[in-house]
Image (cartoon, rainbow, N blue to C red):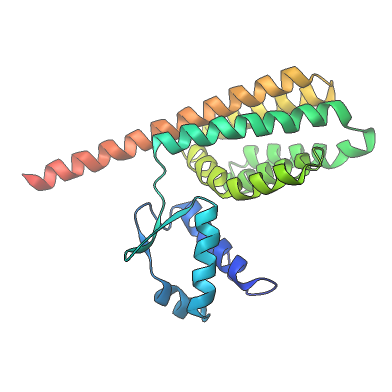
Length: 231
């Protein structure tokens, strides 16, 4: 993401830093230095400080007294808690959509699914990643619940972070993810609300396990590296 300071400066800074955390350019435990960020982006430290509070609310960083802001750990406990919550929220969304869609609603979703298929065919992880969240954004409108919107807005960066990690695990994961999403859309179009919610739960469990496996692999590599350097 390129940095552009337009409507809300703090929000733009938060999005800029958030994308770096989601993609792994900023790793867990890494300190985020206000002065350096302010200099790089040519903004005030006050704006950076406000952006860090936004990132803290979105669970991407932790702010400690005297230590400052550091990238939040993506721990197994956090991953399990995140997927437990989003499974319930996304289940509500697909149920509501299955119950209330009209014919005029479907075209953008079908176009979205077609674009996801193109991303799978070309093995374009970034396009598939963005297209998946565009699909979610469209589906959220069927609920019409501002409280749900607020919760999902704060959770979405953490979901993006975990989802991005899951998609990096193997090339087959694009096909797996697309298969789940296609199944959910088929169930919605048939107005099978329970089936759509079940598939969301299966997909979330599948993704959660991929993220946990990836985290375990990273920890094993770190431990092997530490043992080698202690010799």
